[in-house]
Length: 332
Image 1 (cartoon, one colour):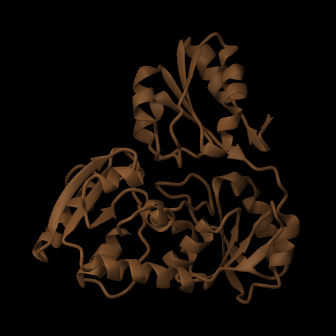
Image 2 (tube, rainbow, N blue to C red):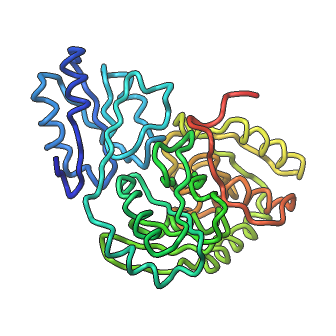
């Protein structure tokens, strides 16, 4: 069914609810779909189950509302593909797909491509169109390849803000199909490839220039190099929790004479960080917190590789990625 411009198939969830006699259902939606919460909950409620909608922000499959999950018999997580299989017995992932055809924008992107071998990447919203994209490119003599799936992704060519393994197929150039600039920018920084971004919604095609973004990040790293009191943010969310990385960074900071504080946190927000009285923080959670939201914070927010650069133990810039399906184990 079409809801808020997305194709959302609720039949799988409804079938499970009816078959298992589920009495209480939790619904989690990304912000772009929250206005449809009443419509979606109304459809599910027709099964006779009580529906509780999470009002908290949701930024991905890794961003599960664990408290609501503990209160219901089944959680319906809408908009993202399945990630943490260990939790999937009580969670149903329902993908939201954009029906926009990609043909025209892919044809327009041909004039931007300069290599014969191209990696094709997209988000879950357009993953059902991947074969169409490959077919168009190949019909023009381009060796188009979509890598994956991976432990964190379920579809060929699918990338996340924290995972770009689908692009690592031996190509020198990448074509990203999707909306927004964060994913193609991350794709460029993570792989070092030339990236062309084609938006099937607006019809725009552009080459991504990551140099300005990198200059800005280098400035933040320089500011953080003088910080004395540094917090290591450890996410409570299972898909973002990186305890091993946090311990390594804590030890590294202390070896350089820094005062280090481990901060176990759910919602990472500017006022919560300000209240801690720190000079800088390192986020081991979603890379987007440091890279996309940094301007909201009064202190430098670094990714783990950026922290290593601030300490002088790393010279090259490396994009922060999370490759494990459910974050890192509590210990090695």
